[in-house]
Length: 385
View (tube, rainbow, N blue to C red):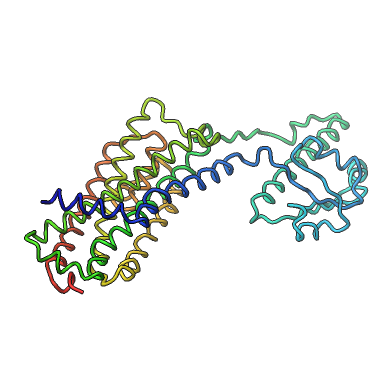
């Protein structure tokens, strides 16, 4: 009986175009857009050409300072600052007409760099300009020291070498935030219509009474509906992981270089799918409660919206925590543990203890939520409209 009810509910869910759209098409569209966006972000502006507005009185010697940067296009304007406001340039550099001559004479001159640090392109261009000016400054200092017969090492007592732990894979932290975020959002978005329809929808259509009159225990009905919501959510999670894996492999260059699991690729993918299923069951339990409490589909979705929005916050927490700084709480708190486990998996780390803690804490929450749902479903107050 449980199997028959479950299959019937699954068929009904996938007959609904809205559920089919949110389960299949939305993850594909979301992942395609975000994967391509982040792949472009990881390129670091390679191949980009920026317009740098300069005053029309700039000399050829001053232009030569930036000649080695092929991605800087110097454009002369009478008012460089106005050119930025009009969107004709990403940054502006204002220097005196006798800039190079004054430096050669040993005089102090000022340079004014204008830009918008909140704009990615403007910020990138200002950094490039700063680097070019810094190189030019060092060359002038070296020339002055050599002219006085002094070694340039006198003003550089030590050399600082900076190395990031994830230097070889600069996109891992970005992917560790992107994949679980989209996975959490996709699972919630895919399961929400099915959950709202299976309980609140039945009450709104006045079919719940007829369903309860059948010789089937309410516990069996509740379990079959919960399994249906979990299956829809898990299907969404599975499709999301498959889509992102295919897009990283065939549509990206920078992310593909960053993500490499070596010999653990199959274990990582298998654990990620299993984690997605556990999280789908957890979300299904929450959405089942909101649907039981709601009298209509609209009301149930209103209750579920804050729960689905919470899934965006753990990504902010884990993004600022190093992979070696995570503690037990990161793997014991539901929703947060999805981001923590996925971050470890993306870095190629398989920690059995952390995985078991994550699974255990989610199963406990699922059991508690299911018991609460069963108590409510056994009372006519919550199942009759």
